[in-house]
Length: 518
Image 1: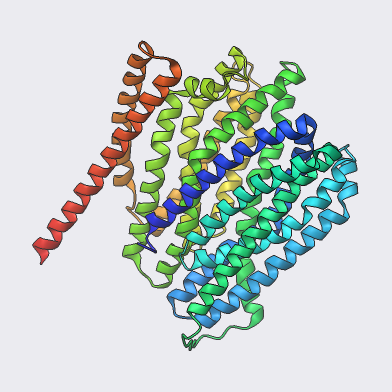
Image 2 (image 1 turned 120 degrees about the vertical axis):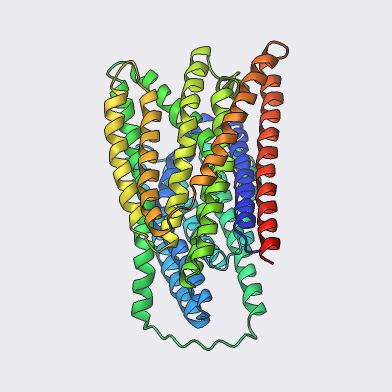
């Protein structure tokens, strides 16, 4: 069970959801402590921090995970150690440079943003880039060993410490002004990354002590230059791919509001964009954590199986990955479609107007397809990276990004579609990416997932009927919120019972086949 696909994916998914819930809670008390201005300062600083973090760490952890799993599969332990050592030197060096840069140019950045108050905030958060680099690198090591527990636990440590320490410091520093209160929250981010890195370093030391008596006798010897070249050959395409969508979203943020402003006021256009990207976007990203977890787990597992020429288990891993993603994304899509208005009303009924709730519910209804499309895009990218096709997901994502920008311009500019065009463009983008990735996968490992998708789709139709009619009946008897809870609970329960029956019948057939052969 330790190295099974499902155990690793479930661990990462559960911990990611816990982290997202904690993260969602985080901003509410901070807004109460620092007010709108404090939240505004935080939002000025955090995106650039996230971008520099992506630049300094993106790609290297995946390279560590892939290279270590391949070397372990070939019993080339000393080579794996060298890959890890050089990867960590690269990631620590780049993180340190980015941390120093954000501190040195804090004043210039703040002036460009039009708010000198942000200068000290940038200085405060700069060490977090360095510690986050260590976190990312060591996570890659454990993922390469197919041990997802340190990654999952360190993620919870990050979120919990960020909330507890950040909010405490924000509260204690509030008497000294809003800027100091915001700095307190940012220092919470720094300390959360420092504690997560400390936890992972302790895990790394314990892991290495357990293996200290193992004698390594590698036959393969690779020059250091070749090792560094191999690391960058994997990490750079993945890092570039990781930057495509954030940059596309940055283009979106300027395009959508400008296009909408031709029909509506600037304030109303900004509000529409906020509902689509902030409210609905955050809800879409919640079930998608399952595909991110699947992508993280599948990369080292497929790399290992490819190194061992284990085609049979490669096919099994791919089937499990698609099944896992479908099991999570399908019921989420159904729930978002059936209960869209009730979900928005439950979460934002006291904050939004009737018109805003209506807009959000329509956007959420459309986004149900985006959950499936985005989930498939991510898991197919992980499969291709596992097979060593690290450039292919970058090319397909670039194609998808271009299609997304073009479709945004065409759809959002149509007054009858307006903001809904932004959500439709996302669906088109990720369905194209998924299709292109899947076509390549079919050539590498043919006939892998059609039966799994059809089974899940058949159950989804059945559950859709259950959700629709139970909700329709209950709405006549009880309140909207209670109907959402009861009908949603029945739907999800029925769904997982159906999945359990399929898995049991599949195991039963396997046992019968084994006994007949025996």
